[in-house]
Length: 468
Image 1 (cartoon, rainbow, N blue to C red):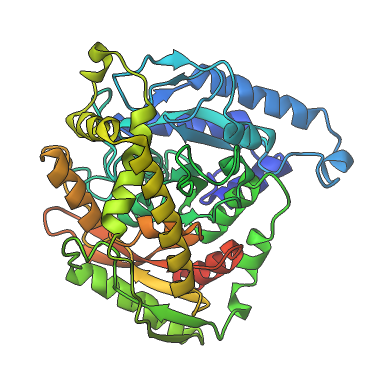
Image 2 (spheres, rainbow, N blue to C red):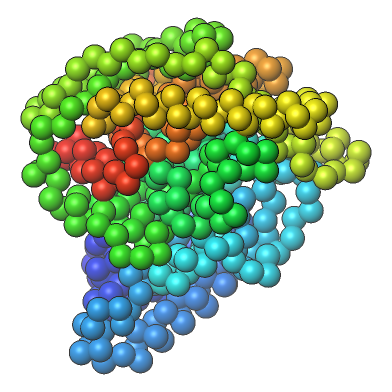
């Protein structure tokens, strides 16, 4: 091919037609990764293993006749497509650090189920991307590898915890990437880097609810898996593959122009407000207003929503978010290798009686029900995305852990509540703004929150906001 495909969907078509081999596509991205090591997007590049996987994909393609390839299901949905995974999940043959020096880094013998689903869909793994320690933070910096940097301004964070993956997709080092989101970890990097980031509802991706919908203390499971992509159609394609079964998202995106007349409530209220201010910058407000105007232009009914949130949210969410650290078995020597942030919050979690953790989990279940009831009055709820443009590298990590956590909550006041609710949401870039401290433009966006099973509808709305 004279020109490499510009979107993941175009790349998928070229791979499935034989116009491009998986090896050629894999070599292209390995070269792109090697050209931009300064972004810190990748912790590990498994080039040799990736090329072997690509050659196996090409061999499977060659073994089929043209007639056989045309049979639905003869080729997997993402045949030969290169991707990469956060350094939080096991990928057979690749090391897993989880972003921490406190745990041994071992080469995984088996794929995590979420990885196995995408491997069965035909993908080729290029390696592991940068994350915060144990995936805890809204920025992708740790003590084991260089920080992930934002391609729009390398002095700024790409967010977290899917920051390395978002940086790689935004810089063209990957066509798309699977991410995970426990408090905004897909949507935050998407908003910071100008990408589409879909947080599915809990259970929409079956591998997210192995063992049930609650954590070890009975709180709602917060972490779900979803796509990061440069276009809505690319996000839909990857999301459909992540579900492991035929899904309607990509066909829905292709019919996005037909969607109209939704009742959409818009609100800048945050559940963190009862504990501390959540100021929204002029850039964030402009991006939010741009989303509202775009939805109105598409024939939707957009109105101010007067939402009330439980004043216990900050205390209860924080307790449940950090409770799992008490289950982490570490020697004193290993504990000393944690970042100050993780070490402090682990100490507090360990000092909290189990009965208190259980009570917080019960309270969070009640808060979750309240969130769902508040938002159920509308077809979709529109909120701002991030409260400000992405901070500089080190801006969070250089603070005392308590100030660090508060600053993260103030930067991301609208994301974690959606994880608590178990509902789907999508982050959409709606505006570019001048970079006040560097060259080029920064991206700002908005968030749309849906009902259970509304991922295709959210992708349609994102397509409406990003088309033209």
